[in-house]
Image (tube, rainbow, N blue to C red):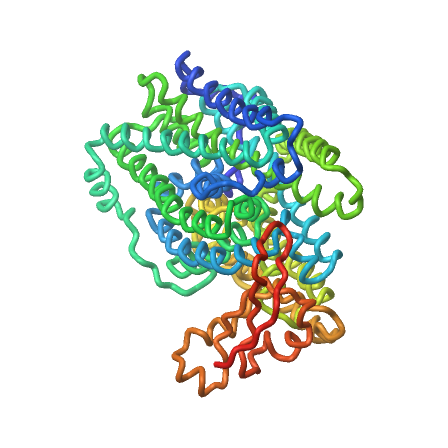
Length: 638
């Protein structure tokens, strides 16, 4: 089956070279090899720098000294995979610019993590996001969250490595397993030896390569068809420039509400609670730098989304003037953009190699982030809590071995992916299915003080069951129909990105537009609402179970793990309204120590029922050095 699209026809086997239309020039090979060499060099530089003096903090958290800009570019590159670079232009070419409205979700999707998730995670001085779950609930919830994340990433790693290699092999004849092995080995070496700092700086370099590769296609393509103005005119004449579709139906694949608001939950699952992103926030020098890096992602993502849309429009205008080859007319959707690029850039030595380097930069950045985050959660959540006697040297060496192990596992998953056939669709879908329940689990802990460990575990299980029920049900229904799902159908694929998610939708129009009924109607839920639906399931079930099991009665609640939603909302009201409601302003510092005032917290500090403001302030001379500072409690009248 096709990687990156939902379609019933399988990919051609790797050995089929009948559709090969282009070959690389020596200069193209030089450009591509330079990408690999420079990526490896950056990683080895950070690995060799201070070799023998590395600590576990330096390896997994870059010593918490990263500045804003590299963190922001790494955040963006982490989920800007090769599948996205191929998928977004195909979506625009097929369905028009409606997908561009997903950019509206970036505002809330990045603002909420910057002001809710980052402050809580950063002030708790975490290494793994799942440490939060133990502080808020207990160790069992932490292990459940960690295992779920590992399952999510391991399933996805092989696919994201194998998919672009297979597409490239089919279009250019580039050796399939040579590219898989080269990428896997290079990525494993610099990630395992250089740690998070090497991953972040190679992400910066690979982001620039991705930007240059896409920009080259836009410039050359628009020049060949008469400029961007002509491209826009052609797209308008053929109805590709979409207006705002205000249909509120969640079963329509793409509408303004689905993209702008359903996309918010998808963004939150990525940039709010995903370990690969949280780890980058926590590597920042200061909390302010972490927040600024999240802000900086907003314009970067808008530029990347716009570039993907422009490539799709340029491709459409190009094929209005130039005939499409028979191979491309019959090509799978994930290969469509590659055919266009090889056709467009032929006769320009070096530029095809630049685009291929752009494609594989997306894979490198995604896979290296996966290796690093998996090594971190395995070490911090599954090994160190049970073996605290490990020295720094032993822990550092073990972390490198774990990263190498995940690299080998990734290569194994790529091999398995080559034999999965139609099941590959389900493998890719799993990533999106798991993201929503994990978002719901963290939201349950942060926003609902009454939620308890039994509620968290049962809620997570309910969310996962619901996610797999709808996701796999959609896949089976579409496969059973013997045709691609209609454009109104929700995607059965949901990769972990605002940019990769589109590649999980069908890019082939269906011949039937009849509305499904019964369970099939539920299975047609738009993929952009998956995260919202599944996270809501976790919260609702978690709250019901928590209330039935006595809530937090008899358990200790750490106030640093709670985000006081109602107090923050009341603080936005005018002071006269606050006085009428007898509420204080709640300018409470979240980094207070529970042990200092458990009674105060249980008597209304988090419930908004007191008339005085309890504020924790650091004692004079105290500083944040990895542990919580000492606080004294002061009371000030409103």
